[in-house]
Image (tube, rainbow, N blue to C red; front, top):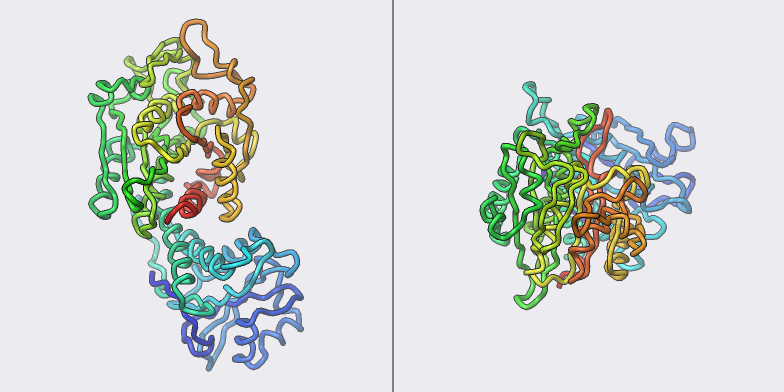
Length: 496
C-alpha cells in the first residue's frame, strides 16, 4: 500500500474516491466546503434533504459521474462541542472500514482539518495525521497466512491524505503513525500465529531476523544452558514440562548517545499456557497462544524504533517459555531459587508469568536502565477489575506512572493505575521460602505486581497488565496490537 501526504487543493488531486468529514450541525471544515463547491453544492443539498447525517461514525457513499472522483465517502464526525479524541478515532475507524470494502483503487482522505476537544494546543494537525496514519495501517490489517483459500486481493493501492502543508513536522507525524500501525500489525501477526509454530525458539528466530533486517537492532539469545549457568532457574522451571526449550531474547536499539542510559522493555513470552500441573479448564484454552502478548508488543515497538530511528537507547528483554504438563513439569510445592538469590515456593504453576519475568527483571539491572517497563498478560483478575478497555498499571515511581498514563491518554491506548501498597505484600508470605508465587484471590493483579516489585527495587519500574487488552475474544477473536501505541508515545517523549 502506498500512503502519502499532499497539500494540493482537493479538486486538483484525482483519485477513485474522496473521503470527507461531515459534522452534526456544526461548522464545516474547509476540506468539506471545498468538496461541496467542487460538486456544485451536492453535499449541502443532500444534508438538507436528510440523506446525509453527521452522526458520529456514520458512513454514506455517493456515486459520482464526470467528477475528479468516482465516489465520495461522507463520514459523520459528530457535534463539534462533543467531539473527543475517542469519537474522532471512531469516525476514522468507520472511514477506513468503508474504504477497505469499496472498489476504489485510490483515495484522497480530507479529514485532518476536523478538530476535536482535548487535542494538543500546538501541533494539533500533526497529532491528527499521526492518528490517521496509525488507524489506516491498523484497520487495513488482515491475517490469512493459514487459510488455504486466500481472499481476493484488495483493489485499494494508493491513499493520499490531505494536509495543510508538506513540512517536516507533519510528514514525521504521519510517518510515525504509519510505523506505529505497522508495529501493531507485527504484534498482531506474532500473537495470531498458532502455538505449534510460535514457540520460544521460533520467537528467538524472529528477533534474529529483525537484527538482519535493521542495522539499528542487535540481538542476543540465551539458551537453557546459558540461563542455567547464570542461575535463571524460574524461567527454566516454567519450561521444564515442554519439549520446546525456553529462551531469553535480548534486542538492543542504540539511537541515542553512548552515555545515555537505556529504557528497558521486558515482555512475558509464554507462547502457550496450559497452566502446567495446575491445569486450566479446556474451554477457551486455544486463546492461551496469546499469553506471549507482552513479548509481541515488545517486538512491535522495536520495529517502530528501527523504522523511525529516534534518538534514544532501548533494550528489549523477552522471557520466552512454553508452560506444559508432563512428567518433568514443575509441581505445586516446588521451591526454586531465582537469579536474584531469593527463593520462591510455587503454589500454582498457572502463575508462571511472574516466574519468567522475575528473572528477566533481575537480569536487566546489568544495563543500568533509565526506567524499566514490563508488560504481560498476567492476571485474569485484571480483566475482572478493568474489563477490556484499560491496561492495568502498577509502578514504584509516580513520575514514570504518570508519564505512561499520559501516553495512554494521548494515544487512546489507555491504562489505569492500581495501588502497590506494602500492605498487600504479606499475602505472598510462605512458610518454607522467601515468598510464594501467588497471594490468594483478593487483589490478584496487585499481588502479582507485588511479587514482581521485589525484583525491581534498584530502578524505576512499571508493570503493565495487558490480560484484558492484548486480544479480543468471540467473533472478533484476534490480537489487538496493544500496548504498542502507548509504548511508542512514551519512548518518543524521551527521544532526543
